[in-house]
Length: 76
Image 1: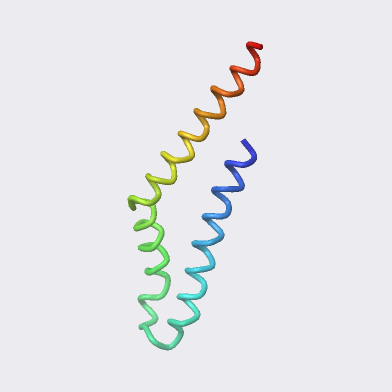
Image 2 (image 1 turned 90 degrees about the vertical axis):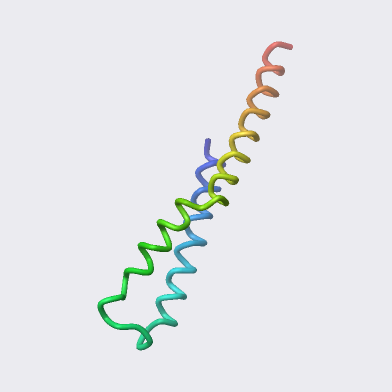
């Protein structure tokens, strides 16, 4: 389970660093009322994206495969 946490944590850290960089580059370039809105839209876009579904399915397949291998070892 720990490796799954590390995988999710790395995705979150990657997204957070992209958002921080984007915010730094946006200083003085966008209206004050729009600040912070891009963070929310970025998170929603990532949440609804296909790549997140693909990542989840890929990790689930790896889990099933490792679980089957573990059960085979227990039977021996």
